[in-house]
Structures are given as C-alpha cells and as structure tokens.
Image (tube, rainbow, N blue to C red; front, side, top):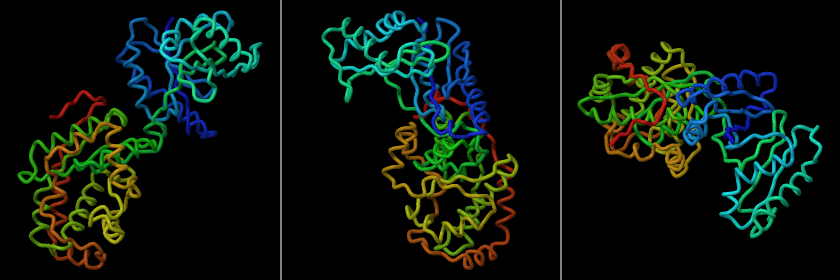
Length: 398
C-alpha cells in the first residue's frame, strides 16, 4: 500500500484558456521541490495534481512538508489508491485509516464520484462504506455535522483514492506565473511578509538590502540572508543584492534638511533599486510599507517616494495592521529572526520628528541642492554584492 500526495487546485482552476500555463509552472515547481527525495510520477487531471513516489523508501513526511509550502494549492491530502472494486475500497480504507478511527469517537464518510460510470452513487458509497467501518469499530458513531474524523473516498478515472480530511494549502498562484519583482528587504518584520504575499500572487522575486557599515554590522547582513533563506521555502531560490549604502546615506544626512531625511533616503533607495531591477529584468518593486505605520508611510510621503522612479511599487501590506503582519510572520517562520536586535540602515540617522506630510516640490528642491547624490547612488549600485539564496530552510541564524 503506497501513499501518494494529492494537490487540489484553487484559483488556478478558474484561469480558463490560460490554465495550461499555470499547470505547467506548477508541474515544474513540484518536480524541483521533490527531486532530491527520489523519483516521483507527477501529473495533473481533473483539477488535481498527483504526486506518486516510484520507490517504497521515499520519505513521504518530508515530501508532504515541501509540497505544503507550494503556492497554488487550495488543499492537500495524503492518500492511497486502489482498484474501484467496493470490497477492495472497504479493505483499503480499514488498512489505511483504521488506526486514525481508533483514536476518535465520531466520524463520517464523504464520497466524490468523478467517474460517473462507477455503479454506486455517492450516497450509496458513503452509506455502505460507513456501515463496513462501523462494523469494524463498534464504539464509533456517525456525526455528519461535526465529526472528529472524516473518511473520504474519491472515485476518479485512475482508481479509488482514500484519505482522511483534506488539509488547507497555501492558496495563491504558482510562483513565476505573474512576472518578476525586486523586494526591498530591510531586516524587520514587514518586508519578508511582503515578499511572501507577492510570491503568493505568482511573482518570482529577488531581494535588495541596503547596508551602511560601520553603522550596520555584519550580523545585520547575515540576519537578512537568513530571512531571505526562510522566505525561499515558499518563494523558491532567489538573489539577494546587498548595496553598500554608507556614502549616499551620510551625504543625505550632511546636506539635507533634517525633517526631510527619511523621505529623501527612501527616494534614494528606490532609485538604486530601480537600477538593479533594470539589470535583472524585474518589472516592479515590492516594499513592506503599511499606511500610517511610521512617518515615511503617510499618503504624502508615499507619493513623494513613488515619484523618485518609474516602476510600479507593490505594497501588499498597505491595509494591514501590525498584529496581522506579525501573525503572518509567525506563520511563515520569519518573526523570530526579524526581531533579533541587529539594526538596519533605515533606523540610523532618523530624526526624532520627521515631516509626515512632505510636498514633492520641497523634496525635489532639497535633492537639487545635493548634486553629488546621483553619482554616489550610481557608485553604490555598481558596487552591489550579489548573494545567491538556495531554496530551503536549513539556514539557522542565532
């Protein structure tokens, strides 16, 4: 009796004539995620992806863990397949799910008959299989509303598939189906969550980080690498671009009005990010900004920041509060690393009372008084370090 994995499409199934493109990207992703574990037969039919191990010694716990973090699945299940003979279905259900039934008091059977040539209707299959299992486990009772366990049988073209309750997937769309973007990764709580949310919408992404040694430490850089690695469990392998930002940041500090420093720094970072995005073919920038969370994230400040460059700026957290963002960070495993006390360049030189409603005209006038800034930004972009992040969660940062 060999387990297989079933992945059920969600939003992908609504893509009409483009559905094949999404399914092809999902197949590519699944093959990559599972190839280290051993050979799998992977195919798609009836809006379901089938992942069948071709050896008995493959670690299915690890296979499920990897697949559960792939965007595009509404639900997943670990299942066994058998012939569509009713006696075989009953015996397989007992062999595969009997131990789970021994640990509960109530259950129900659900049946889905995709193969309409099967002689039993879904209600008949539920009734007869339920009676068989009750006979084997006479302490059980049926609860069709709130059962402690569900036995699910799906009659499909290739056989009968038996499994317990479906588990929720990550949803969204396969990474790479919506283009590529560059995520500004600061090292805080928000930006890894922003990357996760946009990858969930199908964006392939890379990260850019601004480092200002000696004001920021090597530990801060390693922390950002660890965050990119943790994100990669969901988003796939990527590049991390580390920009040496000390000179532009010091120049802004020394030549700009103190109240405008934060917005001027953000505009400078966006211009550099735009240059890097152009080199790698990214079509948008991603930030972790949330409206009114800090002074640089007011409507006026965001307007001034966007005007610094011409790529779309995607802000998936814009309407979320901090509690929601932290909840997501815990879900994806980045929270504990994000709160480690290694300062990033966004917090150094920050004035105690920055202007929260800057006007674009005064920002552009302040930049006009800093003629050397564009040259310093170009030097920083040219000196950017590229770090390749391989997909996985093996990086541990302490």
